[in-house]
Length: 125
Image (cartoon, rainbow, N blue to C red; front, side, top):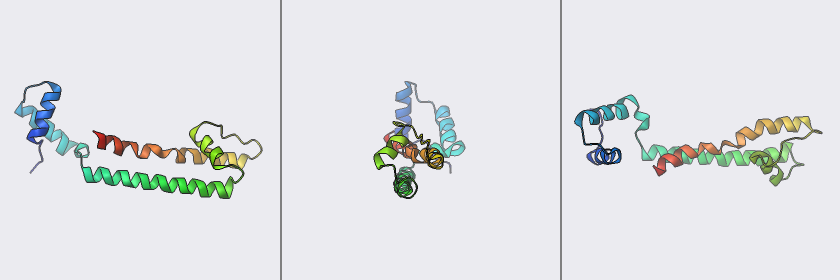
């Protein structure tokens, strides 16, 4: 059996849209949400798991960046690397083209903070 909007959810939707309840619209919306686009149905456990996974990935990225800095960019301090990653300083190293190239490849990876935003946004709503 297909899932459908709960009475409470339907009442909130009707109140938010300032419309009178309509069984046909409710059935259509249930079909869209639960059959055609089930990914839009909020699943607290799935969202929490995605948030934990994204935060774990970001933690590993930070550790990777530090190890990489120590091994390949040791002449840069943590603050200098962070300034380059956040765009407060240019990743321009004219005397070391290899390191500059490494930085240009590394910076997009290290700016993946957007990984956690979707899960946090969904949880807030």
